[in-house]
View 1 (cartoon, helix red, strand yellow):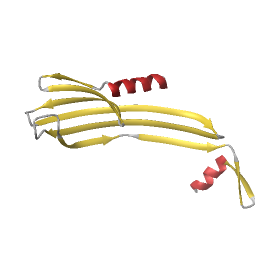
View 2 (cartoon, one colour; view 1 turned 90 degrees about the vertical axis):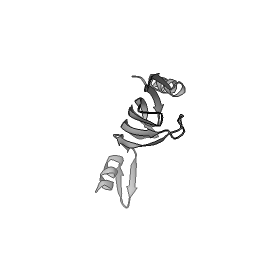
View 3 (cartoon, helix red, strand yellow; view 1 turned 90 degrees about the horizontal axis):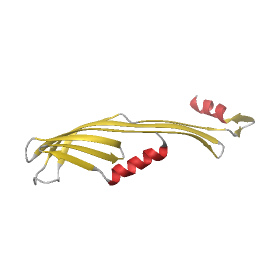
View 4 (tube, helix red, strand yellow; view 1 turned 30 degrees about the vertical axis):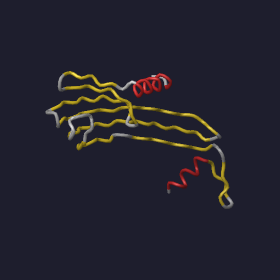
Length: 133
C-alpha cells in the first residue's frame, strides 16, 4: 500500500473514529499512536464492561540525505484486554488490564563520507565496525 494511501486512511479513521453498538456489544474502529485498530466491547452491567483490541501499523523507509543512507522499518502491533468500571453509568471509565506490546523499530544509518581519527582515515562502514567493538 502506498504511503499516501496509508496516511489518508489514518487521517480518515482519526477524524471519523466510530463505534457501532448492538445492545450490550460494540465494535470500534480507531487510529492512534498505537496504529490502526479494532476493538470489541461487551457490557456485563451498567457499571462493568470488557474490551479486547488489536492495533497494527507498518512503515518502511530507505533513502539518502546529506550523504547518509537511511534504512528503517517500523512495525506497530499490540493486543489489549481491558476491564472497565463506569462509576457514573456514563462514558467515563476507569480501566485495568493488560497490553501486549509487539512494537519493533529496526533502524540503520550509514555515511558515505570518510573520517580522520588520529593518523588514519576511515570510511563510514569501517567506523561502524570500530564503534561496535
